[in-house]
Length: 198
Length: 198
Ligand SMILES: [Zn+2]
Ligand SMILES: [Zn+2]
Image (tube, rainbow over all chains, first blue to last red; front, side, top):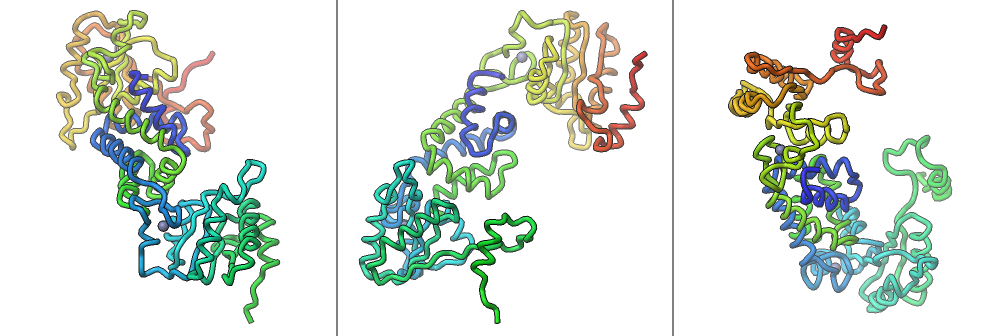
């Protein structure tokens, strides 16, 4: 529109999730007209983050150091390991404040049609982690999708020889979920997995 | 969350319009996990745009050169001048494809309570532009807000001595607007400014 560099900024903003052409234009105009200092700060933050953030060498979550805060922490229960698909899941569980153990990030889920087998998501390394004998319970927190379920079941099989308890996060009706708006698959699962109250 | 630089990136993304804490986190994770190359490209585009884009010396819209494409163009009608509040309005009108003249960006609207008078939005400079005698019609396309209306009326007064036709963009029910959802002020204006069809 105004100049090549303006159009290039609009294009560059399109890489952000759920930012379409109209919002990218609005963002570019906002930055150029109202907050150039913020734009320069954002450029700096992007360069710093991409240069310094990498995988934790133990759990494969994100860190700037050799080992992430959670792996390094002595306040977290080292007997309890939560297995998730991605760092986004670590973030979600941490923000729920419901877990005080350690994590293991697979970096995906089994998907044979896409050529993603156990080796591609580091299952041998996870089995090795569990063989050390320090971990007594593994909470399988892969997604409640077909692939996430298959991955969880595969992990149960792959660790059958180890004296480690394997649990799966509960699946059912979400908190505040009104039954009439819950999909029928979730509902039938919730009925099937009903819990005794008395 | 994962590290200081991750948190700084999340904070930096918050300067984007309508990006709250949750979307900023989602964006940061997406960039770090899925598109580092895009993130570096975005940083570059931000630095380039903030370094090279400035006001056009004639119309005060945005450009990388001394004078913007529209001011420099010989294909645009130099007798017709559209006065708007901001470069965002130039963009909106250009994208409507409804105007082939030149622009004048005020950079705001009159707002006496905020200390913004005629000098602050360069009205003397606009009057001088109109005094050159080249422009025969001015389309007042300030916003249809109280301040935009007041600014348009002020401009009519301030140019009374010049042989220039002053028009105002039409106000009424938007295309596709269903009457029941149009606010009553717009509706009463639309009735008042009704146009004869036969
Ligand atoms: Zn770690
Ligand atoms: Zn210009």
